[in-house]
Structures are given as C-alpha cells and as structure tokens.
Image 1 (cartoon, rainbow, N blue to C red):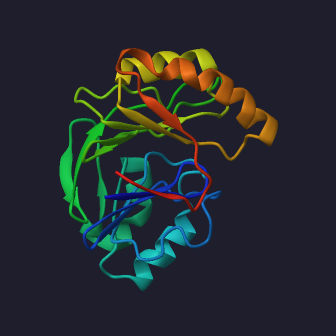
Image 2 (cartoon, one colour):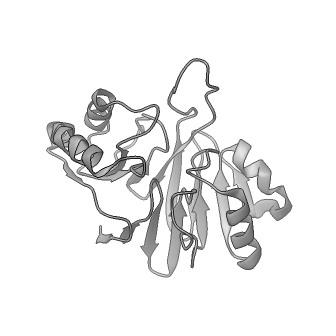
Image 3 (tube, rainbow, N blue to C red):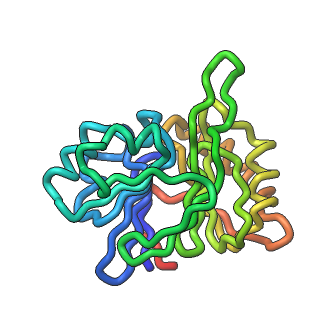
Length: 211
C-alpha cells in the first residue's frame, strides 16, 4: 500500500488498482481527487471537503463513491447510493480497502461554536481521526495525527497518540502552521512515542511512502 500526503488533512491511499482519498478540502490542492475511486470525508468543515469540487468529480467519474457523516452525505443526495451516510460502528469496503467507522463529534473548539458531527476512518489499519481525539476500539498500526487547528493543543496531541499506541504516525492538519510553528511542534512530537516507541514523521505534500 502507498500513502501520499496531500495538502492539510488530505491523504491518498493506493492499493492494487484501488485509489481512496480522505478529506479533500480547501487546502488539499486542485488535483486531490484525480483518479479516486472512493472518497471518505470526516466532517463538513471547508478544510476537509469542498462540496462543489467533490460534486464535479462525482459527475465526471460515475464510479466515484462517497462515505461521510449524514450532514455531508445529505448534500449529495442526487447521486443516490453513491453517497452514503456513515456513523460510529459502521464497516464497509471501499476501493478494495476495509473501512471501519469510529467516533461521533468534532473536538470542541469553544462552547460558543457548535460542535459538528465527525467520524474517524480506520482504512485497513490506518486511522484518520478527522478533527477529533477519538481512540478506536481496534488497533491502528498507523495514526494520521493532527498537529494544528483551532481545537488543538500539544498536551492533548501527546496524550492522544499514547492512547492510540500506533507503530507509526504521520502528521496531518498542518496547513495553518508557519515554518516556525512546524519546528515548535516537532519539539513536542518525540513525546508522542509512548510505550510502543512509535515513529513520528511529517512529510511535505506530494510525498508518497510505502506501508
């Protein structure tokens, strides 16, 4: 399997002939959906999904399918069962990958800001939590770990990584960081290793790694 880090929270997974993309949002690049067979969206915020761009991609590619929480999936009702609402406990197969769904809500930004639906996706053993600190009930060998955001703090990142206890981590949700901010976050990243001595890597958008 190959994992390609795209912009911000977006990743592309390639396995065999299947291509699956998670969270192609406003900072992900214009080509984030190129060649995709399946799209998973964790929640409705613009940095995770651009409805017009996704709608255009689904219109152009009749085989492209979407799985997302109901507030997102409902925006694509014209595509029938190609756009499916998912919630905690669901499982399905997408583009040849086994997918399990965990979690219900976005991390709290502030009590005055509504907390939207958010699901995390375990794709094979790679876990993308969206904007949450959801700990999946099943083991994740790879954690895609958010390292910035309006709801983020380093303390929570460290505790979250240790709770999930993956073998390896790749940084996501990083478009808001300046180069200085990236360096500061890297100073704390070593503390995420936890009992498994997990590796932590931040790669630039466009970088592909083999898993």
